[in-house]
Amino acid sequence: MATPTVGRDRIPHPPAVAIDLATVMRTVGDPLRLDIVRLLADGRERPCSELSEALDLPASTASYHLRLLREAGVTRTRAVGVHRLIGLRRDDLEERFPGLLDVLTR
Image (cartoon, rainbow, N blue to C red):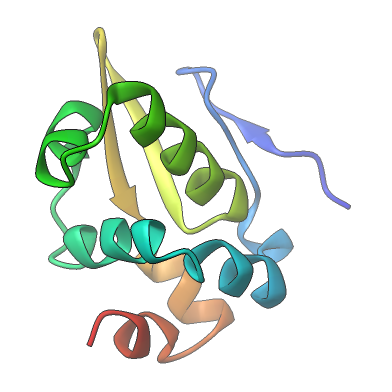
């Protein structure tokens, strides 16, 4: 398996070629994580705090679910100062599994 890429922000993400359909489906199979994907479907990055507020979750619970989505290759987390912005890896997922995000976000 390929080594996760680590940018200057030191947040590890799997390379696009390592994103596995079974892992993605297992990860988004959780209703809460599917809700997160649907919130991010508009293409706008959101801070962790906004996502936890939108889903009425404690920060620790939101962080756990966001980590699983990132490690599965569904989302990308970007550090901006002390904030972490979360967005879907739409291009990577569309390239690997055409139409998957459209099905998940309907």
